[in-house]
Image (cartoon, rainbow, N blue to C red; front, side, top):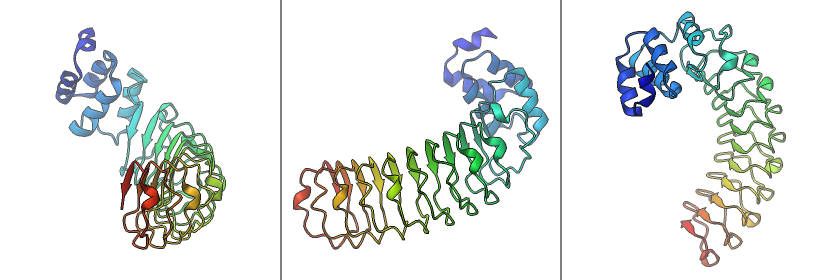
Length: 273
């Protein structure tokens, strides 16, 4: 089976499609350095084994513990709490799952819990590197997530306080309609505040690298955003003066109909109006 290590990716894909059983899948993966995508390809597209069968998954893991570096159980309400392999996973998606207790997922590196509406307590997930909680409508307290590198909280309407998220590198707060104070987010690298209708003061965000303020209708003063690299102000209908934005690299002003003077923006590298 060592010959498989010499095969190109395309041929590995073709072989994995023809595998009739989990034993063959494990045998192939153990002979290849490309364990991860072989398993995903065979699992999702060709139904090599039943993802809902915990015994099958864990049996495969015993053959090769790297076989499930990534696992997607999205929309399948499998009881994952007793999976012995969970804490060894690198990436786990439970999108749409009915899970409520997520404390045992604290060691996952990349975790997708989008649409998990029964989750209320995420305090144990502060060590996750990439965390997607988009559309988790029951979450209100995110104070313990300040060390997450990439955090998606879009459409989490119950969140009001983001003061502890200032060290997050990439933060998506799109459509968090009850957030008003974003002054603590000065060190965030990439920040999405689109459709955060209660936000009106963005004067503290001048050091953010990439800032999306689409449809933030309460904004009138953007004079302090001149050092932002990529700035999206599309459909911010109440902005009039953009004279201080001449150093912005990429600037989107589409739908800002009250702006009439663009003379100071001649040096903007990529300007959309």
